[in-house]
Amino acid sequence: MIDIQKHIISEAFEQLSKSTKLKESLKGDLINLFKSKGYDIDKDAVKNYIDSAEEYIEMVREDDMRYSVEDWYKETSMNYPEDLKELRDSEDDTAEADWEDTTDVKFDESKLKESTLTEAPMDVKDYAAKLKARKAEKSQNPLEKINAQLDPDMEITDQLQVYFDELVPAQGKADTVAGELVRAMMRILYRDYNDGDLFYEGYGKETCGGSVVYLMDKVEDLERPFSNIVENQYEDQYYTSELEDAAYILIEYLNNHPELFIQKNEEDSRNVDENRLDEYFDIPLYEFEPDTSYDESYYAVSDDDIDDFVRGVVESDLSSGQVNRWARDGWTIVDLDREDYDTLQELWDRWFRDFLVDYERQEEDEYEDEEDFEESLNESDKPLSKMDINKLRDLAVSLGADKKKLYGTSKQGLIVIIDKLRKDN
Image 1 (cartoon, helix red, strand yellow):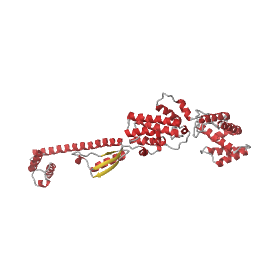
Image 2 (cartoon, rainbow, N blue to C red):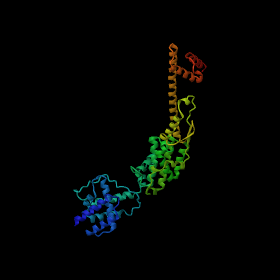
Image 3 (cartoon, one colour):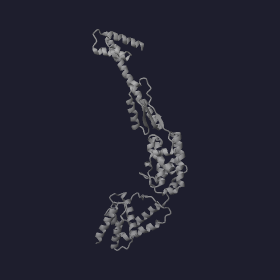
């Protein structure tokens, strides 16, 4: 009968391994099972025991993913009453901690022994000591741990790094509001140091504009440095200097608000809409009009080519801007930030210049063909074909002759007209 009960209990704890929390009905079943074995316990005791078991299983699995709830049960089942007493004593010892913890801080054990079904039962007293140490570590004020690592001579960014290391996980949002504030500030600094991103324009607005909005929502004192950056369109060392000033203000704010180190965080600063920057800043916008005032432009490029170009650039290469075609040959690209304005100007100049170069090269080739054709005409006494006459007529028209008056004109007459038109031009 006892073996059957053990199997049922193992099955119950196997379900624990597949869910974050044990269902209340399953806890009730466990209470009944334990009572049937002669243990006089209450529901709270079983709940504490189950929670402790879950913590232990999670810790062991960090080193041995093969470790199962059945392994745990085999290690502890024979020691249940003593194990429960040790664990409850450990709970009582740390229940009166002054610092209330609201985060899920994991017990950082570098190496736990790997457990299998064939190994000896675990040392319950050792586990209770580990649990007590873990709770003591959790009860320590995070701000005290941070301040213990700070040096007055540290650069402000090095100080912020200490906060980051203590409060921000390797991936995802921070557990506390203080941690997420630090994470947002470090994001902006990182994008500046490594990529030169400016949070108020271009790609930088996409990568860290949302982090600025998050900080502005939470810390009013950060308005000054961020506003200075936008109003003066700072970049390079001036931009970095203002960001470091913002980091200093943030650290002062955190030190004056220790409650943020235990306030549970629900937001991800990376998911804040960067377009909300407009709520805080009047970011200057620019307009661009393509310059087609070249003499050759009418022949070199069509209006449709220009329209395709500007729309393609705005859609594919820029993060701001809208195309307004106000005439057949008139465009204005509005709502551009400074970086996109400069980019569009550079791309337009290059694209349009290439069109003109191709057109001039084509003109030279056509002119050389015309000279070769005239030379062949002058050197030949053979009658001209219909195609030759047409070519001469087209050449005369291109030089300004009236096409209607050229019909019926002889070869020699066309050559005379062409020579005269060239002299006049």
